[in-house]
Structures are given as structure tokens and as C-alpha cells.
Length: 574
DNA sequence: AGTCCCCGCGCG
DNA sequence: AAAGCGCGCGGGGACT
Image 1: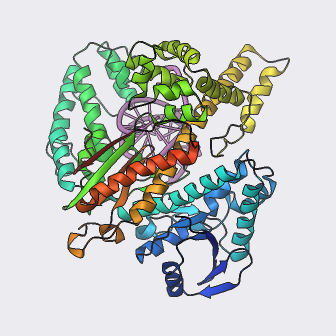
Image 2: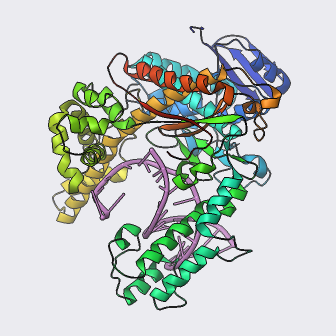
Image 3: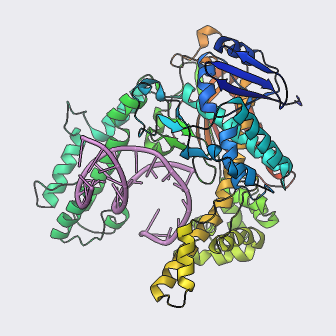
């Protein structure tokens, strides 16, 4: 599998598409049809170097043309211009038209087809600001990036990061095109069970209506407003419930007849407004849920999403994720991804030993560090999030004694952040520097006339940033492991054979209807939609991709990343 | 009417 | 239980 990778520059010139072989090769001018043919017939190792995958790939996919690899200059610029591993970031930072959002034309996002002519600049989900697409700009930016990598402290890691980020850009568009196979029937059954009968128009579902009546009776106020936080809080105070907020973890502590129906009401109205019948019509009208994924959308390098709440699909709706007839789902997630990543980054043999096998928390208990699994869990979370008080903060010192290398890594990251410094993930993504406002708060506290309030504010702000940088290195490196996992898996799935037309997935309507494909991704879990005949092959691919990701990032360091993997018809959590 | 912020809660 | 990271979204209310 060692095909030489060749970079081909792609640019736009009016209606024409310009393609140039490498840095100095001849420029070819193509029509759209010729461009499609060129991509379809390209050598296996070709890497398309283009401004922004969102500008090129939806059109290719619509023509059933897949791209194996690219360099997404926009996303890679964001990484490189900030990375502490780049020796001289000045040329990148000076290229301000590549510095994301500020300048440039509007680029239609993958879900924009319906609203393409309804040009509403403020509709952020449909359009985004674009980077340059002319050949001179693309060529210059690629040269800057290649030089930045070559001269960096860790060229191999950065190359891996840029490749993974760019595959992510392609995959995000593919996931949108493929969609999550969604059973409208199952979704509607869940809604009916939980919420009751659907209202004809304007009203509330029957069970919600009944609960609202119960709550109003308990509040002794037939017209009480239940959806306005301030009004609800006042109504609660009137019947003697002296809560300071209407959040469920505070209300749960109160013993009053209004609490049970109120919590039930809140739970149901949440389901109704977030994932009710309206959501179903808007987001899965045709048996596919097509969220817009935003690679690099989170500061740590995780993906964000826009529209449909893709990253917040409630567990109770997971059964609606349902394979098409003749197909199955492979649902896989990594148990305790982040602490495992931390053990590997820190080369902490003790934590890695506790992580051997399927349950890192039990491993910590077995090592005698804490006495129970729940304690191990909150201790580990507290260590990675920077807890200082409560049970979590109390347990962290035990972890510090048992795993000095791992804890040293996150403690160092926190200290650097508190001091205004920058920290970097394993592969090379760095935090932004503190904002000018942050520095102002710090210097104000050091001035001779500073008040105690100034100093308190500065300490708080420093510690806030310390918790951010502490978590950044772990969350960001975990995102890198997941990106490497996805990239390898995607390549393996693309190599699986297509099925006969008769076995095509009915609701897909694209190349993903005839071949195993990724259907969902959420930080550390994936769902693959697979023709039944290829289930075992695809499951093996999921496992081997995880192994390869581990080796790619961490070499021979002995760390396990065990998968919880199921082959199933629906994605309900077992 | 539009915009912005807060609250609350869903996910990892 | 809400102290301790990162998100998106819907609803209400205050403001323009």
C-alpha cells in the first residue's frame, strides 16, 4: 500500500477549472465535464490540492465521483498558522485572505441547495466566507504550507495531522450526502409513546397537556407559565419551593408535589422542541438524517455540526437510526478514549497498564488507587477537566501519586495556560494565544492601584484558561486519534465491493447506496451502514483501522484502545 | 421585526 | 451532586 502521493493543484478561473501538476508543472484548462473525467481517471495516489473541499466535492459526489485524498488548504492553514511546531509562521499569518472568516466571497455549504437563491448573508448554515480559489493564490498557499511542514519541528506528525484533517473535510461532505439511515416509523412510535397523540395544529401533545395541567394544579395557578424561567421560578416560590433556578438538578432535591410532574413536563417538552414531529419533517423527511458536519469546528480540533443537532441526538432516539432492508449497522465506540490518549502521550506505563483491557476505571481500582469504579471515573474526569473541589477534586491527588507522568502532562498544560502560554496536541494543533482582554485583566491585577476584586478576577481568569489548556491537549489529541481511525476506515470501506442493484439501499440515492459507508461520527463513536453480506469485513475494518490509528500516533508504546462494537439493525444502546 | 443574551439541556 | 472541559439548539425576554 505504498503508492507515491502526488499533489495536483486545482483552481478556478471563471467557468474554467485549472489543474496543475505539482508546483511547477504545466497548467491544464478544463471544462466541468473534463474535470470530472480527470478526477475519475486519476492515479490512485493523487492528492487534490484545493482551496476548500466544500467548493469542489459536493459536485463531484453528485456525479458519483469519489476522491481518496486532498489537501484542504483552508483547514490546514488554520492549523499551521497557529502551530508551535512551525518554525516561522509569519508567511502564513501574513496571508490574511486565508485567515478564515474575515474576507472573501460566500461559499455555499453542503446543505445550501434549497436556499441557494435565497441569498441571506446572515444565514450562517447555508453560506460561509470563502478563501481565494485562483491558481496563483492556491499555488502560493500550498508552497507556504509545504515549506512550513518541511521546516517544522515534527514534519511527520504535522503531515499526518494535515492529511487527517483533509480526509475529514471529504468525509464530512460524504456523511452529509449519505445521511444517517433513519426510521420515520420508529421515531414516530417513540414520539407517540412518550408524548402522546400528536396535536392537530398549534396545541400540545396529549401527555404534555396532561402534565401541564398537573403542574398548574400543584402550583395552584391555572394559568401559570411553565416555559418562562423567571415566571416559573416565581410561581415555584409562591408555593414554597425556594429554588434559585429551575434546573432539574436543583429541583430534584426538593420534596414537593409539583416537582415530579414538572420534571416530567420539562423532559417531554425538551424532546418535543428538539426532536419532535417538526424535526422529523425538517431533518429526515426521506428516511435519511443529513446533518452538516463542520470539521475543525471546535477549538480543540473536534468536529462541530450545524443544523439538526447532529451531535446531540438523544439516546432515547437512537433506535430510530435503523439499517435499510438487507443492510446492517456497525455501531462502535472507544471506551475511555481520552484517558487512554493521555497515558500514551505522557508515556505513562502505569496508567497504560491500568488501561489494559476493556475498562480503564476498573484497572485503576485494581491498582489500589481508589476503591470503586465510580470514584475512578470522577477522579479521571476531574484530572482532565481541572476539578479542584468536591469529590472529584478530593480524589485527584491519589491519581497524581499513582500516575505522575500522566498527571504531570496535564498539570504542565494547565500551568502554561495560566501563565498565558500556548499548548499543543500530539500531532501539532495549538491553542490560540490569550486574547488582549485576558492580558488586560492580568496586568490590571499587577498594577499598584489594583483592588482585591481585580486580583480575584485575574486569578479566576487565569485558572479558567488553565483548565482550558489542560483539557485541550487531551481532547485535541483524542480528536486526532479519532481522525486517523476514520481516515483509515474510510479507505478500507472504499475498497469493499459494491453490491448488486437489487441489494442497493432504498433511501440512499447515491454511490453510498451500493457500498458500505460511514453514516455517523461523534467524537469517539461511529456508525457504519453495511450490506449484510459485508458486515464481518466491515467490522474487521473498523477494528484494524483503530489499531492502525494507535500505531500511527503512538508507535510501539503499549496502549490499548478497545472498541465496543456491535453489528445490529438499529443503534439503540445495549 | 430583528438581534442578542441567558437559561436549560442534549451529546461526547 | 453541578464543583470541572468542549459543543448546538430552542425558547423567552430585554433591547433596539
